[in-house]
Length: 116
Image 1 (cartoon, rainbow, N blue to C red):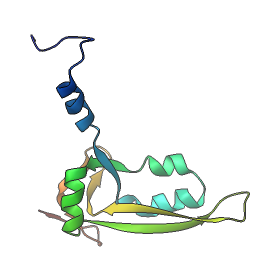
Image 2: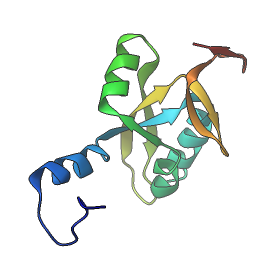
Image 3: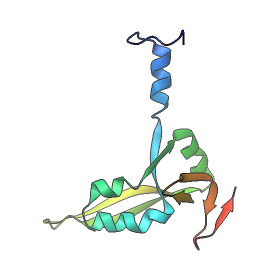
């Protein structure tokens, strides 16, 4: 309690606070089809809401172990004759709408899971 001081600047605390938001947005693989459909419907905010944030450290670890891969989706902008591309990262881990992303359970392509 003695370290809590409202409205008093502390650079160390500011750094700790910023680290809490140090993340990379990834798309759970189970949500990939829904994400692409939303992009095609030009519902970009809703599509972005499907992504979850993981720390940069976790991201680096998983991308090097092939637990995350980059994908690209192409779609046409409504009311325009323009084709856009959106790149995103897909994470191959189990996702549950109640529990969120379960980083210790790898999602398989056939909807089976393995604990890491």
